[in-house]
Amino acid sequence: MTPARVRPTDADVWPVLRDTLSEMRLLGAHFLREYRLTVGQAMTLHRIRDSRGLRLSALAEGLGISRPAASALVSSLESQGWAKRDRTPGDRRGVVVRLTPRADRLLHRFDREFESIVRSATGPLPRELREPTVRTLNALRNEMERRRGGAHVAREKVP
Image (cartoon, rainbow, N blue to C red):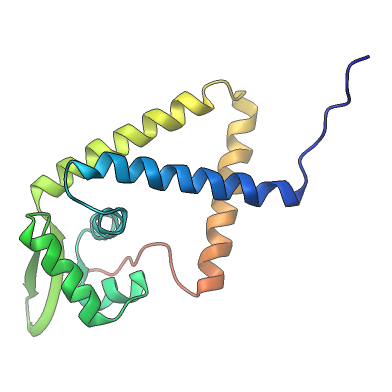
């Protein structure tokens, strides 16, 4: 007799997601080690890239840190050649943080690496399950954004 297939419950989702996120963070740290970047710094670079430049105040708010902490983080990224600060035209005090070409290349490589991992893991997934999987992941992300009261990426227009 073949054992009945057990369907996952809501209680099964969190441990699997937690462990998956942990593995992603560890793999990301492993990938970034040769560049002397932390996962937090890489996330900051992604946020800057996705916004095509970001005011320092919006970066601090988006990361949930103080403006002085964001300034220190950007200074660290600047000293390593990953980011640069530009003055906002017409606003002497305004600062926009942008990526350097070097950071763009790194993030492109990082994204390709992780996309390859996702493709490898989801390759066996039947096509009809991919759309609901993506929809579920988006719903989860949206709920987390809602609970923390913020948008996924600050989409502020900067000059």
